[in-house]
Image 1 (cartoon, one colour):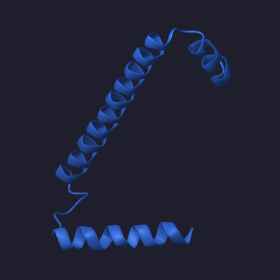
Image 2: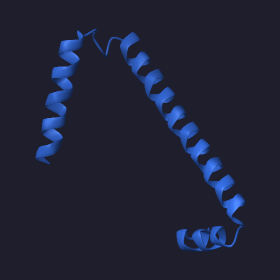
Image 3: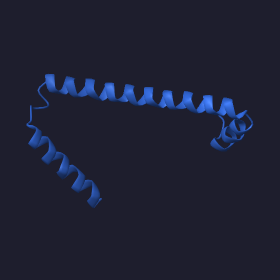
Length: 76
């Protein structure tokens, strides 16, 4: 496997146009990976909801729970 440093060195040897093309390709691939992760998480949440592991919540309850989660994560 190529090291990060070696990859940077190889990219720096490409012409500027190809470097820019590579940047766009990598960005698009990253977006697609994030999209797939989000889709998987949504499917998992829907499965949990349908199985009864999650209960419907009001927007206010969701925001309050999110606030508690964020406060707890700041304490760590």
